[in-house]
Length: 251
Length: 174
Image 1 (cartoon, one colour):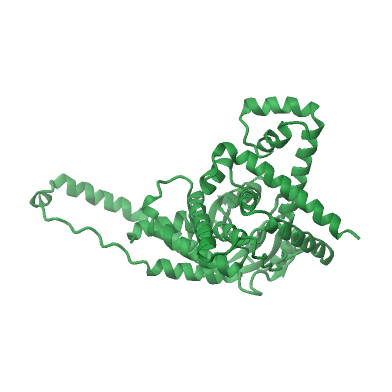
Image 2 (spheres, each protein chain N blue to C red):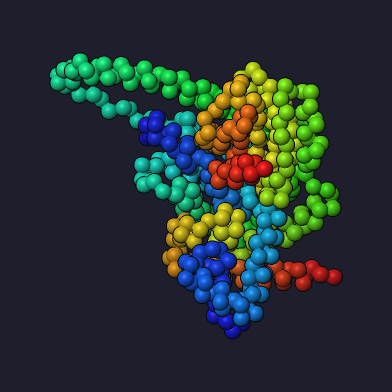
């Protein structure tokens, strides 16, 4: 061990933490330095090994439950009491009219957004249900050519099914689910030890805005592509969901 | 404690990082039930002090609280982190052929044992960087290590881990 970079800078380079100038400088050095090349290689293989071993631990359903109860039990602060102020009653007439307009506009928005809330709540429930033993897949397969034909004849639309095992999202199976009284296609993917559900249905039936959110500690991400509505639900990070969405859109 | 909308914000911003919290606590305390108790308490504390959260990185903010709670746990229980063995649960991915599964479980056990054997200050940076994908800035924020020394701490941690792994490998070789 003679190279001073092999003990420090090479790690910053490997982790993508060097600025452009230092990074370029280090790359020039790397071309000549066998020691740094070797360190870089061994770090790559260590990282791959750790990734494959999947060492991440996750919260048990029991802990999730305990915390949910804790939070529900947390007393809420009383809203500050309003102080009586006579001036407040002198609201000009145009103010009332404006308020009326806002309410009319707002109602439409609330209707749409409460609809989204209702659908995503059902999707999150469906996701939670799927985590119970034996509920995740009606057809268990990592092969998209097995899962896709399984849906034939069971739905009035044909969902496309793809596997993303190489990118870290292996397909694990498919099943039917019911959302808002309609049958939808559900496919499950693995992400490390976590499970991601993809729900697909014709957008004409019910569409969600292209947005994401979270509910009860689960993240969801919805988008529309072509005639179809898609929604991912999982306890993995929104970043992971975004990555899977990009992969699906690129297909 | 919290007004309804603040509680909603807490659920949106902080709660989704529960798995990361458990991951860090479990690797620091090496025991699931202790880790979950500490995380439950840390979550309550985070909720109580949520008004001190100034926006920004909610995961780093939560993990900092979890890490502090873990270290206070060590003090309170007068336990050195070296006294505990990692209580390993075997859980493999749901789908794989038996052969790969066995080989994977084998390597997982070896890695778990070796990583659990590292000193806490090295173990935590490996967990944060390699399992949680934290940036150096986040690692500095969570652990309190000055940002300038995150790189060298990681470098030493990786060297130790690699050294120990090759040691374990050669010991176990026939």
